[in-house]
Length: 341
Image 1: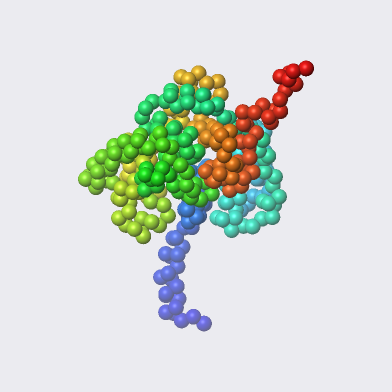
Image 2: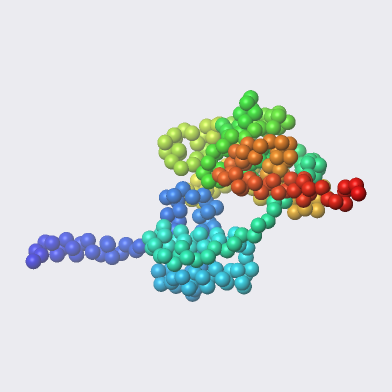
């Protein structure tokens, strides 16, 4: 039997516990994503699809739903909204994360849901002459330099705009790509023709950095826990973005006001406009420059394993796609129309 003192203690504790509300579902999702160090883009994408899933079913809690509701949502995306297979699979990945990592529910029916089959499409590749026409149509500024890096190194767009000063070695002609797709680092070449343009750009960038440091605003975002481990690193020259934004912006996670890297949409827009000026009929995006880099290396006789390492592909089968778009019609077979009788 409890004493009056124990009861009084319970009375004092209970109101505070009762007033504590559990975090909202989306806040739980956000916390689970950040604990796993997922990118801000992944966080925004997962939250978007989880919201869509909940709203589609009249704001029912996911614990009350199961396989029929998930399948109905995915079917609606494919049939009524006509989204691509990639988009449908991304929505499914977000829902899987919600159930497994946030709600802690291991449901066997999630493994049985069929993912949309991705169509086997060949990448868009420019000829060497078209690639140079595109680059010549770009302005001789930062955007043009980034586009030349994409074609000259095979980097992805986000890898280029997130490039840090410490990872560019002008003397060795190397670029270290940090935390690429699959959280992997790799080394690629810095084209000789871009060494001096990069040197000139870094000199201008250093001037901006020194001005920011004089104002006490030179800190940049650091990955994972580096900001706590090395408090001074955020203001070091080596950690600065090579391609910094023109102004400051607010970090949506921490609220810190910093100079971030250049917006990738500026590069995408510049490449599209350059393709129009060059009169190219193919749909051109920055990623086409990466495809063209890989294909032109294979055309030059470099072995596929070397190209795989430069691109950062985990499996050589991913790189094999470029063997199908080499400039050898019909897999190198000579048409009978071109042979003498």
